[in-house]
Image 1 (cartoon, helix red, strand yellow):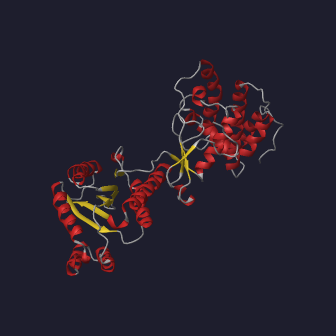
Image 2: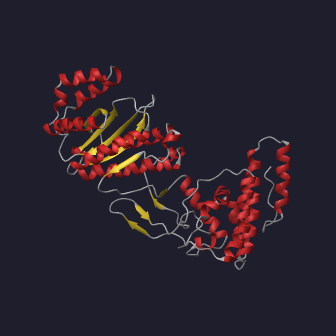
Image 3: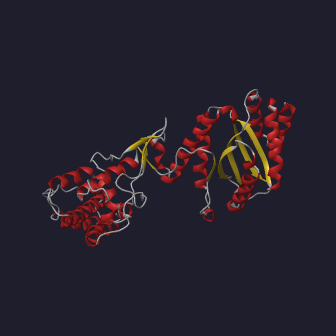
Length: 402
């Protein structure tokens, strides 16, 4: 594969139906040559030095991936939401994609929104997951053509409950009185669930169809066996996209309220026949693009842009090991391009590693100097170290950044 200096890779892509283009990752080899071991130790010193200088860590990338990184496709994730932790944003976007596909595949008339609470004020995620697994195994699987996506949420008081978009084998939307249902939601929020139940009974449960009423009765019986409390299923009364975004929002909420004892427990559970995406992708814009840009500069600086198996030379976890250098290259691409242009074509790999080591120290010190606005003894010491590394660079002495 080839890597260009525009920050993008050039992998082979496949068109996944009518959805986004997805580029398959290329896994590297697991062996590392003796020569590479001795050479990478030289280049790897720049990582330790960057850490010593206090360089901000870039997001760690998956081990063993090549310069192509992970799956790349254009998503609807707004750039403003990139401030959210990357893995959380990816879970939310994946949920949105899979739920949108489920609604499109089954039709919005067969989609319901199921909310499930527990009899007691259950705060243990592990116990909540155990009960949900039992309900899904013994009840959900017994229903023909039943599919669901479950998102767990911890309330402010610590209680656990589930939000589940479900695909039922019947049309539950036709004839449903959404105007009365909107009043029911308002009463439930402001006057309590008991008052809302009285209102719903007075209005014959929003003119729900017989199939939906049978589902309510069967679910109520099954849920009681596993100590679930209130269980409500209603049709989607807004657009499919609004429903998908609404459920995706619970991923971020749950992450913010996650407790140490929740480690290893799933936030999202899928019980669908088709999933069109997973979290193994990189954002087409924002920090993901910047990371790929730094990665392209990194492999070009080492002269490995045409190497089909970079992991064989640098090791399986090379992206993680050199993450600080890659981040520095991405933050100052013009300086890296300038140094790269001055390196002769036939320079050995060892000499390139030494040059990268010096450049990394220079960029790390430069970044620290620019972060210190006032002149202090600390800045004086850093400036002296900065001057000491300038003569190692393969280009003429750069302009002092202060």
